[in-house]
Amino acid sequence: MERTNTEFSLSEMDPTFMSVLAATACGGAALVLFMRYCNRQRMKVKIRKARSRRDASVQQAEQAVQQFSTTKPDAENARIVSLSLTELTKRLQEGSLSPEEALHAYMEKALEVNKRLNCATDILLESREQLSNIENCRDGLLYGVPISIKDNVGYKGHDSTCGVLCKVDEPAEEDCVVVTVLKRQGAIPFIKTNIPQGLLNYDCSNPLFGQSLNPHNLQKTPGGSSGGEGALIGGGGSILGIGTDIGGSIRIPSSFCGICGFKPTSNRISLRGLSSCCRGQKSVLSAVGPMARDVDSLALCMKALLCEDMFALDPTVPPMPFDDKAYLSTKRLRIGYCENDGYLMPSPSMSRAFRETRELLEKAGHTFVPFTPPRIAYAMHELIVKGLLADGAETLLSNLKGGPVDPCLMAQIIPYRLPHWLKKTLSVILRPILPRISASLSALCGVSSVPDLWRQHASVEDYTHEFISEWQRLKMDVLLCPMLGPAFNLNYCGKLTCTVHPPPSTVPVDLFLSV
Ligand SMILES: CCCCCCCC/C=C\CCCCCCCC(=O)NCC(=O)O
Image (cartoon, rainbow, N blue to C red; front, side, top):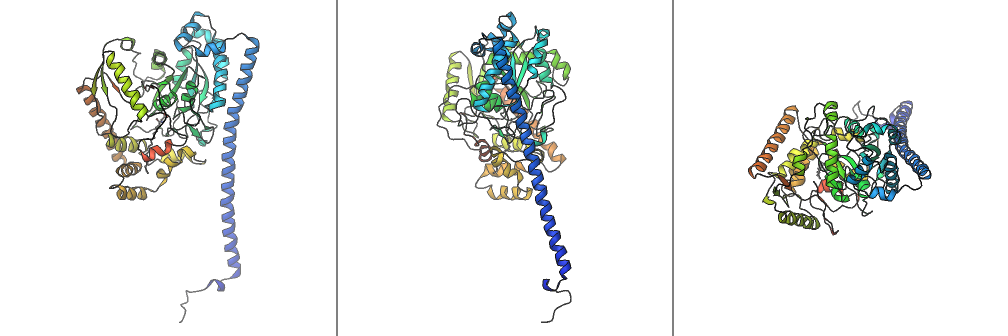
């Protein structure tokens, strides 16, 4: 057969051209490999830097504690860290205990807990400098109380990493509003605590600081994302901590670690100066709140925060002080209850805890009415998942760029990374057999346009009113519902958000209340 003049074989090509082609290909491949190598080195340097900074602060704190114990050998540290917050504040205010003693007792205990649970990301050595003018805060509600803050709570001169590499070496220029107000109330932030990478997860591990462990069982997670707080407070290394919560980040670690946590309405406490990996997301709002050993401590912290200072520093916060009358009221309540929302079934131990709580409250004279949250599957997929990831997870994924993905997040991230068309196709194929996975995959695509985002926001608004109307129709004062728990195994939480069915549990649990 005759050849056309456009056909030619490789063997007939000019050897010089061939060599240039081969050299270009090799050079290109070498360049890619070199860039990858450089990127990996940069990544390692950042991780090493963050860790060594944390380790150096731990070492300096150990020395400070050592030094203090030689100058004050009779300090009753074990006794100090066993006091409740009410007792501690009383002793500090009457002067039978100094802020210096309280701080060093807690620093010693926190360092011990951190060794066991790996829950600290930074020790705030400035806390010792704060002691020199702490007398100016003598009238503060938290005068001399050492407190812990979650990694993403801005503290001047320190990183708020959110567990991602791109936020290393980006120290806060100022204390955030919450820290400023707490300091003015006499509190002494002395430690920052660990989080899961990107904060959108219920475990507590990231490539910078590693995995935090549960204070009651080292095989389990403390939960997330305020997991370092849960571990530290549950382990006795802090008496009061500050966490943040969008979809359970205060409540879940509180449940897993056997402590109390409170998620106020968003913007009841200022969010100014806090770090996030999905800033600007407005469908499911974040909130700052306290975590502690008992409910009275949560109330005291809320009371301290809801003051003129906060309302002046962040005028977007409604100037509503803490309602002492409502908190102290002994009025019988009308309590809505929902043991099973039909979407996530509580574990047997959590059901038992729920029923025992209900019985106790009924005996105390409170009235119970059944409450069913409206359209729960729709709310989960269309409002929560679609809202949190309205951008198709682009912002979260861009925050993870340039670094390894933590094993606790991997299962959750894989579907986020699928191309849009594949998520949509899989969603259609899976609809008849796995309707929840199908709905989640569709929601993971996010919104398609600005009008679609507005529609999503409008749907959230409508749902909120639907929920409130049902609450009002039943004349409820509060709602009692179970919390996720007991604590899960390490690395399980990312899979939970993928499979969205209840975790099997054989661990007996005591009564953990989410307030
Ligand atoms: C096979 C495909 C199914 C994939 C389904 C994945 C659905 C996951 C969607 C969203 C994840 C939601 C995680 C929410 C975690 C919230 C934690 C939190 O409150 N963080 C906020 C904070 O710390 O401030």
